[in-house]
Image 1 (cartoon, rainbow, N blue to C red):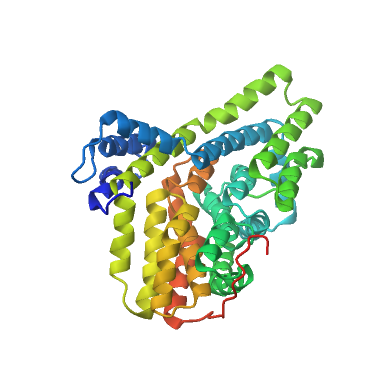
Image 2 (cartoon, rainbow, N blue to C red):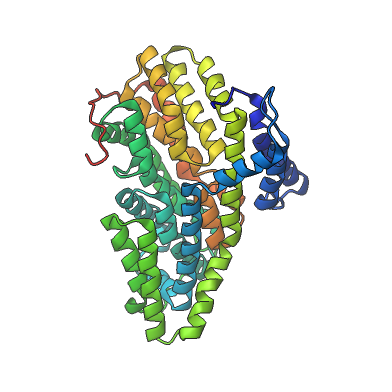
Length: 437
């Protein structure tokens, strides 16, 4: 049964945001409210609600919550979290982290470490088409850089996430790109050209900003000894990612090679190896539970009609060509904030965005680009989104601390808004939406 539009369906998310912001303002520290506690409380509110004019049993709502939290993409994210934690723990124990950091410090000037990390993330994410895989590969390197240089951990993690969101938005094999071009019936290459023109200034500005930030905070940056043999797990991660392997296979290869190298160089024995694996997965357990709880919460919000209310509210306010484009951006952004999944938000907003595009004669290629840019930009700023949760978990900081340093994600949204006003990057679309183009 299709849910009716219902503003009350958004009450759990509003409740979470209120208590989270209130706690942060009251204490002066937005890391005070644990995310898991906040989302559990919001889930309690969600279980208390009902559809307008209907009565759903508590047992049925619990089952709906459980099915949504156990949806295949959520469970896949949980497994990625656990494997990412295991990989980082193994890489740390067998010396890969210190070796890769010292190698980087030996070839990069200190004022180019952040731009270098960002651009590496851009190349890697564009090649593999997944932000989660990029964060998995680069976040441990970022943590090592902080340990060696005294840099701001939140800044470094935000730099990693920025590079990851570049490919998430622009890669030919990214699920968000494929979703955007399919819903608007345009070509991958056309979308790439328009999308690239809009975000290129954001990339350039981000590199300039990062180059101007000293990373050592007064700490002398020294290139220490490194062992190229210890870097094999990272090399395998990057190579298999560039080839286009599934992120779980990429992580599995990295963990396996890390264990082999660690056993070979005496970093741990067979018994200690098991503890190393468990330690890393334990680091990510809290984030894995959060992902499941958020999935269940979103499922209930959909059931109550909250997401449908967002769709109808935004589209009813659209007027004119510029308003239509901002409406498209607002629509996909709100759904991304509500669902914490930019691919799902593009799929949900896509049909309505196509109608708006047709009614106000907006280039469908630009519509596809705007859908992807706004969705990816906001996804990379959500403290309860997978990217920030993963990076924060590996760095052992609050994801809220990362948000102010999300320069690239913020600039994506800014330059997309400018593109709407100046009407640039308008190209004729071609109906070639096949993912393998």
